[in-house]
View 1 (cartoon, rainbow, N blue to C red):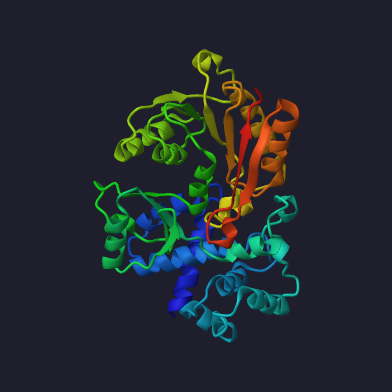
View 2 (view 1 turned 60 degrees about the vertical axis):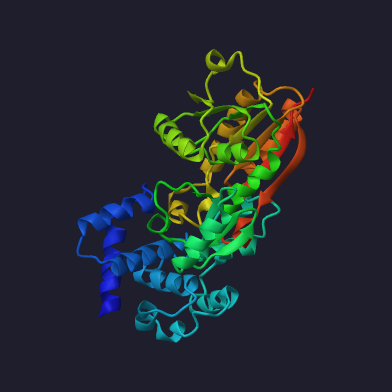
Amino acid sequence: MKALNQLKTFQRILQEYPGDTPLGKFLPGFYRQNKQMGSTDRRVAGRLIYNYFRLGNALRELVDEQRLIVAEFLCNTQTNSFLQHFKPEWAGCADLPITKKIEMVQHAYPEFKLTDVFPWIGQVSPSIDKDAFLASFFTQPDLFIRIRKGFETHVKAELTNAGITFKDEGNNCLSMPNGTRLENIFPSTQNWYEVQDASSQQTAQLFKPNKWDAWWDACAASGGKSLLLHEQEPNLKLVVSDIRESILNNLDERFQRSGLTKYQKKQLDLTANIDPELANYAFDGIILDAPCSGSGTWGRTPEMIAQFSKGKIEFFNRLQSDIVRNVVKYLKPGKPLIYITCSAFKAENEDVVKMLSEQLGLEVEHQGVIKGYEHKADTMFAARLIKPV
């Protein structure tokens, strides 16, 4: 009976879900409208709908209930009442390696193709292990935090006291199960850590700022890269910009909590002429966390697979190329551009770097995929390029 009710709730969510909204924004509203759902009901409902979308475009010809059963089997490492009810012969195999479970699904459904999970696998950066990347969609990525210097002992003690299982990833990075309610452990007045994906934290290795440098975080969003930069060198002249005013307002609050108080903020459309705002600026370093498909983060937002089309890859390549041409004009000769995406696609990664090298003359000092799919993290790309003197 419990499993049948869970299925009915899943079907209601799928029916009401508009498809062009992140699940993370839709589900809280659904729960508010269905106050009879307890915390366990919400947790199970969230698991089912997210796992359903983790199948990507695979087995689209099956009815939703059958696709959900396959997804539950592939995505869970422990048996549960849902699988036990609808597919008891699979329930006891939940702890098998993912490769074995994929074989079992292919035996039951010969039409199942792993490449249908992420249909654009042929477009990814060449260094990505395609099979491992595809299989990673069946695993929920971890939650990662970056501990501020000096608070390592405090954070670990609080997590231990709260009974939270965590892993020290090195460089003040901790991982823990996704969904960990940190706000129930740490008061909002404490500023001991930042929530930030492990791969995003790794991009800081390319920054290498010097004291009193002038840096520009060109697509600052919530300011995560600026905070990494500030952690490395607090004595900088920093400019942050974004096209979205609301994002910049949120950034102010985050910066203040972290003690980053000296910076300039500009609302800029980097595809337009920005000389009126930046004509007198020349930077010792620019961070361009470029707008992108976000395909390296779809392990967290698998519903995005159903909303994506191949043509968007070329759209983002053109957008990134236009933006980077605008941005590089304000970089001093001999200084670094840090180009970052959270995309897995070659067109957004290596192809843009190739354009920077061949057409604008920038020297590629480093480039590479940050293979988050191997570590339950986001997959990203980062490059450090030097403007010719």
